Structures are given as C-alpha cells and as structure tokens.
Length: 203
Image (cartoon, rainbow, N blue to C red; front, top):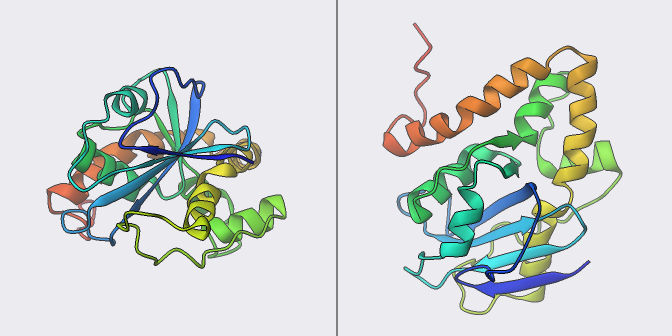
C-alpha cells in the first residue's frame, strides 16, 4: 500500500481510472461551519491519494475536473455527507455516485450495522481502525496514524461494491439502489439548503 499526500490539488497527469473511491475529512459534522480539510481517493489498486487543503485554498482545478467528470463514477461510504462537503467547498456536484452504506441498508436487512468498519469486517474479513476519526484534521502536519486512517476509508470501497452488487442482484434490489444513488446528490443539496433533518416525503 502506498499513501501519497498532495497539497491543495492533484497532479495534472494522475490517472485514477473510471471508478474512484472518495472520502472527506472535515473539522466536524456541520458542513457550513466545519471546513473541508482532506479528500482521499483510490483507484481500487491498494493505493491512496490524499489531497490536503490549506485553509481557504480550494481552487484545485485537477481535482475538480476529476470529481466533476460525468464519465468517472464516484464511490462513497455515506456519500450524503461527502457530496455536500465537496459541493460546498469545491463547487462540484459529484455525479454519478455509488454509496456502500445505502447498498448495505438495502440488502443487509438482518443487521443495523452499516458502518464502514462493520462492512469491512463482515464482507471482507478486514479490521480497520477508527481511532483517528475524531482527530484534528485541520492541523498543518498530519500524523502517520491520521494518514493511514484516512487512506483506509477509501482502500476497500471497490471490494465492498463488488460484494454488495452481488447481494443487490441476488435480492432483486439493484434498480432500487440505482435510483437511490441518482437521488443522492440532490439529497446532499437539500441538506446544504436547510432541510437536513426534514423528511419531505412525510405527511
């Protein structure tokens, strides 16, 4: 495994293929308050590329071109949060997208454990650490443990997608999942616009 840290943008010549795993680290869980600090990417080859942003430095033309490319699928776990953060700070709405958490909730109805750690354990037999989840992602220098944690959030998403796609097809829920994925960017925009907790489909 190789973890490569980039400052403020990706190199112009980096090719990550047509489906990339994506995750974000922020200063907290309130998008308008807690700034975007890091974006993690992986092509599913066991390597991770991390883009660390200096405060206010969100130009990132190469990263924006990649995330905004409609020919590149973006693979998330709980994409609702990450898509909103990327839209708010980079001005890019990620499409098309896939979310392993949504896929898990559609097919793993025998459990309420849909976190990334549980999925990696149950479907891949991999134990990932979440110890650095609440650390200071705004620090100028990130620790080795922080970099390893951030990378682990994208390194296994391709393998999880493969397992979950099989289960979705087996249970006849692939179309349901696809429609949920298509709506996900709009759900993220509703969060940013002021409807984060409101069920607009309720009576």
